[in-house]
Image (cartoon, rainbow, N blue to C red; front, side, top):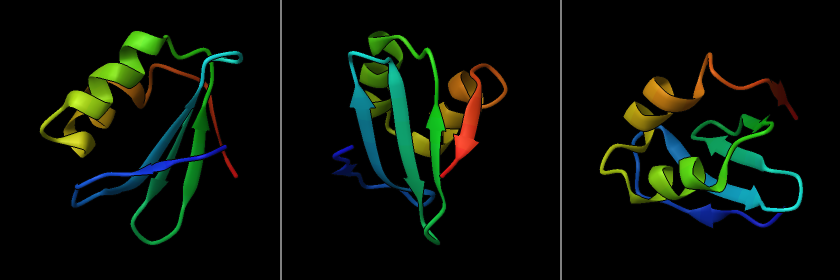
Length: 69
C-alpha cells in the first residue's frame, strides 16, 4: 500500500485502501500497523487533523481491529 508522509511527532506516513477499508500507519521508529474496516471518513479526518497522534489515540486505537505488519 502506498503511504503519504505526514508532519507529526508520532506518525511518519499514512495510507488507505478504499476497497478493503484498511488504514495503514507507519510510526516514527519504523513500526507499521494496519487497521481494518475503517471508514473513509476516519482516514480523511486523520489526514486533516492538526495532531495525527492525538487523532489516532482518540479515534482509531482501541476502536478498530489491527495488526502490526
